[in-house]
Length: 449
Image (tube, rainbow, N blue to C red; front, side, top):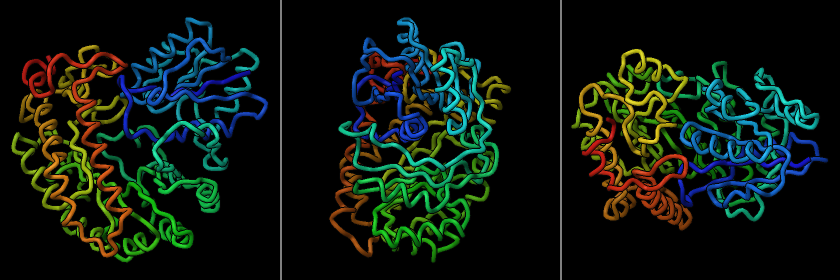
């Protein structure tokens, strides 16, 4: 028996920032050794649809769901059974079930072995539902990634889930229970078995709790590795821990600031975030850690003035990188349900709608037009990623230990970010053709009608 693991591309073309799909290293480790396995990552290679396989496993998030369904159809037409898993099938199981022979809802650690056993007997069930009881016991099998040409950053998982329940976030919709933690010894085993110059912790919040965070930091400090993570801003209440992060090799952190408006933060369920962002960023900078800030534009208290204000903040605080995302309601989240109940969704299933393009607005904002939101976010992204601003942001970073590696990472990451912004803007999901007009012109014309 041969299984093909498939990572769909969101749009056509080759991204410049593709990292290893850790989920397939986990699935490969859970697959009996007698079964042949291969990985087709459409972001970096064409899928050889006519190469014989006995089972196809596709991971799908909402942005690449359309392409995942296209891939599933192509294999099913060839008589190959398809299993869909990941965030989107877990949050939209009925929809996903219409495009596959079987779906996996939730984690795969406790369901994948049964999927494989049933596939060998040609008796796949329509749906496998995780009990969320098994996590972090198996060492990922990264042999699938050899010679694939991924970015040199290697992915490591410590925690799964998040302590917070933000309205817009799909994490708590996917993992409604408490955060789960991989045994520390297993995390260190994975790190020692993972070659690479830079580690990235995939945890949605590296700060699950202070005790476990300090425990992993002490271990990392002994191994002299470079790493980055996503972490909640409340870690700034513990400056001594940030100093420990720096000593343990932390190069950069990603923080979801989301909004500069307290009313928006309260609506999101992030009122705890309404602190002094400048002080938070400065604390990281003083320890030589770069800050990648993410923002969501379009919550109900945002007006067109939000774009200039947010750009000014990001530039003044010398953010390493930044995402300025138009608010996108993900199915299965409280935000999606709220906007749908208020009759404000312009596309109920925007991820499948042929009219949708990356960067579009999919709902009616409260204090600006849909066109203003889409065009404003694109303009904000372009301004932040201009060559002049990339240069201007770098000298102000207060590195105590500035080195060639950090400088090189800063330059490389910003060049890739700028290129990806222009590559994706206005493109159709599912591998379609580029939009006929530029982002600004199209957004002014008819972005969400």
